[in-house]
Image (cartoon, rainbow, N blue to C red; front, side, top):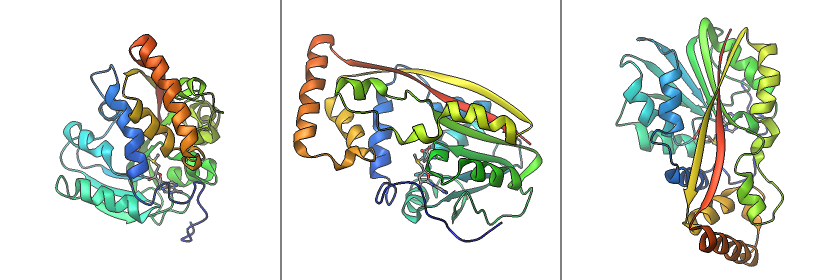
Length: 258
Ligand SMILES: C[S@@+](CC[C@H](N)C(=O)[O-])C[C@H]1O[C@@H](n2cnc3c(N)ncnc32)[C@H](O)[C@@H]1O
């Protein structure tokens, strides 16, 4: 266990605040599903009364707004993120809901003793680490023998149709550690691996929400106004022809145990 924070694999400014993450979260308001991936996954997690829980890379804490309605009441919950700005957003969003502990932490160098948590949550963050394997080994180290870790990841084709519609190369950062990568790596680290898919369809006619999503992504955030104007025209044509743009995709939940 080391206490130094290493260089992190995401571009400057991506997670200083949650405004780019919020732009991406907004697209899911157009889902045809009644439930969200947060409520869906929270129902699958084996959280028991009195559990000691840790989230790594908690972002703006959105998971907990739904999880607290589903999990038992008496929990000891620590939320961590590498970015102080993101942790501040979590504090702002969640402090009135529950007595969380908050701490800046790099998942690859957690400052917690071996076997200290009953559950660890790693949602949409492993692809940002320098070494997902090192992060997973660190999670395994802090998990109790009876503990579980919940991992959410998109697959290699996440939102691909948006990028083909505007004819840009597929830029998704998540491809560096997708659900396909996890399916290969997790069995070599954890004794038990369960995988479930949350299949979703988004029908959206709000072009600005799609453009904000695109503009929030690393690499595409550097495109000029001309790029976005052309993208707007292409997306408008699709909405004029079909009434909406449809995106089908799945989110992937892995529940792993030591
Ligand atoms: C895509 S956001 C996901 C946030 C949240 N888990 C969610 O699902 O909405 C990724 C988060 O991981 C954090 N992060 C990236 N690398 C990290 C690391 N090495 N250790 C801890 N957090 C990290 C970022 O600061 C960001 O808040």
